[in-house]
Length: 369
Image (cartoon, rainbow, N blue to C red):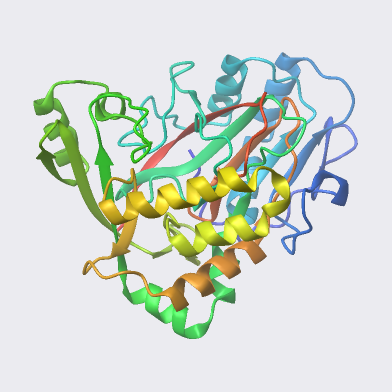
């Protein structure tokens, strides 16, 4: 469990010659783009060959320091260790003492369960860039951490960018900071019963999200997670939740932006900033679809202010510009494990050129007030 009240003030972690690993920052050659974030993530790098049992012993011996590093730096990246199977990924997280979730409650992304506690990362829509978000930021009950493992690294692109939520908030325009600190975000969800190729809806169907076709069971889950819901004609399910845009980290007490940045300004910025990465006609198609879905209310996720009004453009501009200034885009390597604090660090996904296989796990569920 990631709980350490002293993590921010404890002395930095250091490795000795006999530890079998080194501690460092990401190097320029490992980055897809330069970054101002020198500490996110801390890289735990193998020194020489090591078998998996030896790696688990290393994790067990250093789990307190690893947990402190996640809280201090926002995340750690294990690199060069012998992670070849999903079960080894799960074993690593459990050796760290983390409380893994067997469920992906009310998730927006289509996912498939691989082990009891490991899921596929976002499936499909390879040309589409997934914007910055804290996992399950639309729920009051959300994971304290999320972790990813690279089973097959892409030859190009397919990065999982991460974003420092604390420095993002600190670097925003003062007026935008004040606005987000006092406003809450309303999340709208739209789900069909069947998986469909209908282009105006692309999310997971509600039987997959809730793992049942029984509407009474769906009702129970919605009530459990304090989600407003309504059934529409054609077995369509609509959900509404309200959550803060800025939260206080439960341990460091730092103020952090925490939300799903689902806004047309973000999508237009993706098209402009990553125009060198592939088929711009396909990107324009996805952007047009996103606009139509938002307009018709058939998007798998859309956001407004709690009062139902649109989030002002000047606020989104300040937020998105600051997020990308404080982003880290590193290139995946096979066997990498990324473990991030889900309050301190957002993540996203850049466009994918297959083959690429990234798996995910999360847990230590906590209540965000």
